[in-house]
Length: 85
Picture 1 (tube, helix red, strand yellow):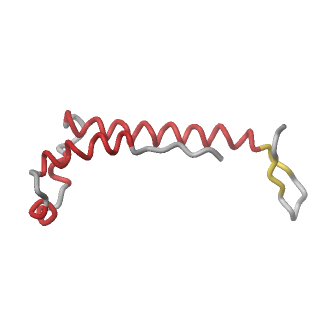
Picture 2: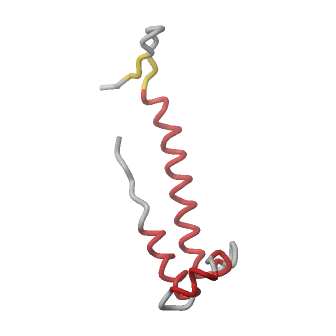
C-alpha cells in the first residue's frame, strides 16, 4: 500500500515513495558523517580533536582532554539511532 501526501488546497497528491529516497540519502550521509567523526577521535586524521575542547571544560574533567575525546568517540559512533517513520 503506497501512502500519499495530499495538498488540501490543490487536491494534488505526491507519493511518499518519492520523498523516501531523499530521506534515505540524508539519513545515510549524516550517519556516515557522525560515524567517521567518532572514529576519527582515535586517529586525528580529519583534525586535532583535542583543540575543540574548551580549556575551561578541561579543567573540570577528572581525566585529560585527550582521554575524554577517546571516550566520546565510541559514544558518538554508537549513539546514532535510526528512527522509523
